[in-house]
Length: 202
Image (cartoon, rainbow, N blue to C red; front, side, top):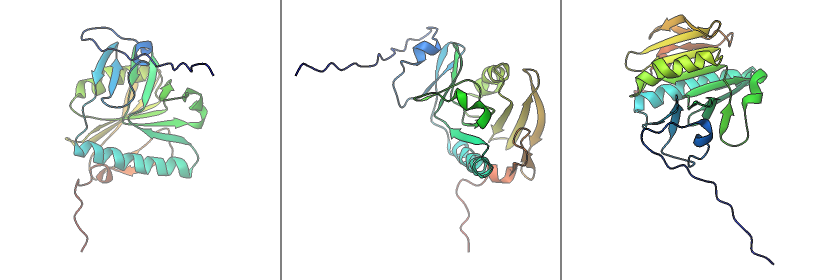
């Protein structure tokens, strides 16, 4: 028998100040540390803090239960690459893809196109979520965008109107969060901002 040739995927060497593309991003090694491509810049994702993780899990759990119960699509969590164009590959904290947009789900580790709903939970890189990423999401027809601030205990819900996000709700503890695209989905803000270490039941 002849020798079997093994082919290895080319791995990207990261250089400071270099401009990258989605094609370059394909060569990133699988696994941590995780990066996002934001306007041609590679930005490393820091490990999220406990309040971030607690809120992310709370939202994803309720959202996934609702979507599955009503057969509306699929809910995914980071790390999951979402390629929006040649300059931007993001890892939203939580995303929802409706049945109608299933064609953006590609083989391997990537979503290529805009999810219906994106939820970003603010961490140390606030600027990216609040400004650059938010702007790219609206340009690429993400229909709804939630910005969750665990420090302020605040959730902003935006609706995409002609490629521009319009603030539809600002929710705080005691309020109920509503989705514009998932009619019937309601989420108590108190549940989003639950205690990190629950009080033991007596």
